[in-house]
Length: 219
Image 1 (cartoon, rainbow, N blue to C red):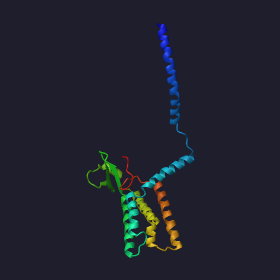
Image 2: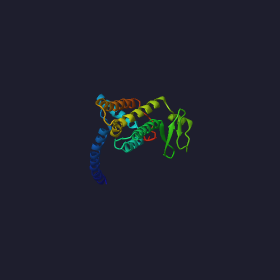
Image 3: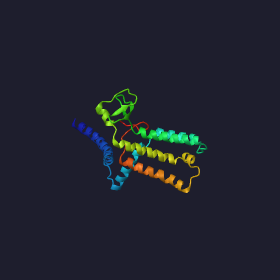
Image 4: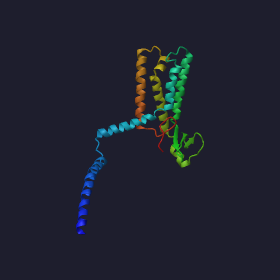
């Protein structure tokens, strides 16, 4: 009887040793993956820079920019505005899109109990839901109320759209078919300067709103 038990133990022991030999490298790999490598100050600064540039997606509403890029060649006749009517329509398109960029910075969104996205307009009292289907409690609505920094965000978004319009070749040819060297240099430097200043502003003071035409919030 004792001999049979010893033979069974000897048979099981090699199997356990084989299992430990397989598990040991896996455990070592798991410990290696769990321990994060230390980052240098330069790497941390680069990471923060790239994280800050992610906020640049909130500079302009995508729908407004897409609409402008589609309509710009049409209203300017591919940059050939031969009449004052064409120039007036082009100017009206720019003003309409600029106002849209300014206003949409005051909108925000949230998810209701069913997970459906609801949009509203931020006010000094809270959030006014556009469709009026539901009403947020006062404590919840207070999280979305208007702040002074929102006006700076809206103005910066307006300037960025102006820079986008100045970069548009059809718009430039419509109003300046034969620009001088100074005008051409100004049309190149001015949009770049506006873009850099507004980008730095949005990196330092990022917008936390997720309004119409902007990336949706996870909450």
